[in-house]
Length: 427
Image (cartoon, rainbow, N blue to C red; front, top):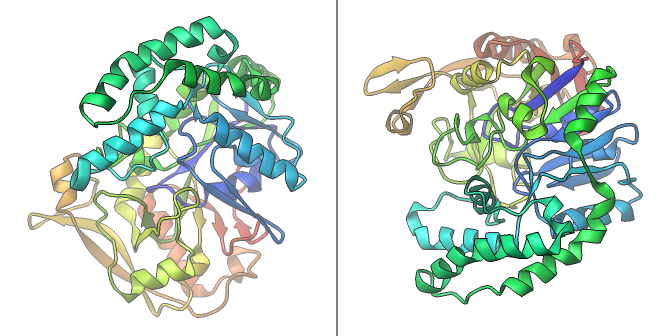
């Protein structure tokens, strides 16, 4: 039962799309298990660049089946737009499967997300405004709309009515917005039903049968460990579980079937949105990382906040995910620095702390403790093996591996699909 989980080990945007795509030709299924179109993956194939938001990265591999699991929240308009865009570029999307139990992002979820964030003002979370959080809230409050509901108009209407009973009160009386008509929402959602129907399946059954047949299944997380609703830097987090445990609930596969958990680490650290970020840089180094690394959000278009590598976060990701391997990305971005600082611990109230503090207050006050490693100036984008890297680049990778607590099994030395050094096979 070769089931692998691949997830972000920082705050997201680590390069999961490239890692998933790299494995896509060797696996039979690639599964998104949480999040929605608030997660973005950029995959470069030859001279073609693909920006994916909701679809699994494996959709670009002709040999595997891409799956949207029950833990994902689906905006039908975004889904159909992405599929159309890929079809126009000659990508075969016919193998896609969507769980009938996945929840639908409705128009009112998007409205509530946007008006709530504006209402919070300085206290805003920094959401993408795409209705993700409100949809997960509806799911937990048991007033959510699932994909399967699109095929029973009576049930769909009842559920939309139940959801809008409260939401319209909030929109009109608290936010001074117009009430949303039930019939209008139902009509829009029913308009997507037939277009989506060919993809809808019992994905829990499909995936478990595949594992029983010794097929290789790759579970792809969106966002990153530090954005996990339970284990991230709450409340500046997403609304689901990108950590490894989320793969089990978000796809309907038992934990005993997971054989390997791969964490994606950027060779430095970035973050989009609000929240604490101990190694964040506000100087020319931060701007250089942003410019050289092309650090702009795939989904949001927002500039990413940039900082040096944080080994405290990497160790934490290893622990909460049970990581077996790391894929280190964007090592090439660091070329040209004479010295490269790495955060090895924090200073909090005058005390050295080597593990991530559980207290939100402590983390807000954490100051990075740096060790400086010698850099390199040689171009590494053509390196095909670890030995091809400059000695200082090798030492940097070895130091990060020792600090992070799991072996680095692959290294990204450029944005292209073939610009990767594989040290140990993931399969």
